[in-house]
Image (cartoon, rainbow, N blue to C red; front, top):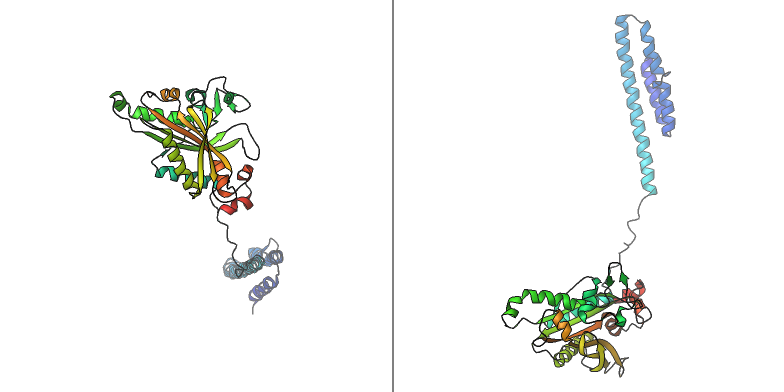
Length: 345
């Protein structure tokens, strides 16, 4: 074995003995560094004759290639070993049972709202949606609510710069929907022909300055409107009774109308219900305001109150949901407590 083969064998041995990348780099320096064994051999070529220099140079280059190959192999071996240790440290125990993610569900108010829409849809009512930031005309004036009405008090209404308010009810949709309906059928109206009836509900969020166990600054309401040439209180009672028995899935309840006052209806009435069974049996519970649409409101829709008449009602969706699901505190609907909400999945 000549000296070059012996040097290659020595380098391979030292590389194999290197336990860490740092040890390997130190061993590399002893052979391939600026003062390394191979570098010294290359420098010694300068003193040799030309013919001998070529042969000796080729042998040294073979040696250098062999050492570099051994160095690369050991580097890869150390990297593989380090990766193996890392994989073992970060290994996942795939035999553990999976952690299933819980499935969500609809909020009870959303469930109640969808149920209401479905019931009235089966009776031929459209569902309308409109802005929650309203102007004075639609929220008050068009609904026959004068400037000195208590509803316009700062203690009852959220006012916004520019003369707008957070709508205090979904009743503005009476006017918005009816005005569009009248425009659509203006040719029939002008010709004295019957206009298709206005039959619509408007569910959505509303806002008033109020907060306790049965009231919230933001709450949900469904407004109902039916306008035609011969719509009476009889139709109101029939429609609402059909709705309320379907919503609570029971025929064991009674309906009564109590005289009341609303500026946009005349005559007006509060609607109470009484269950014939269950924990609320025998108690009258207020669930809605209602009445025949006021003639001035009919005019503001663009219709002749001598020809067209109708009824309107407004029910609190939150209150209906409380009765349906047996909830005794309105605030539970808005606290976001999953222990409460998960019961409705």
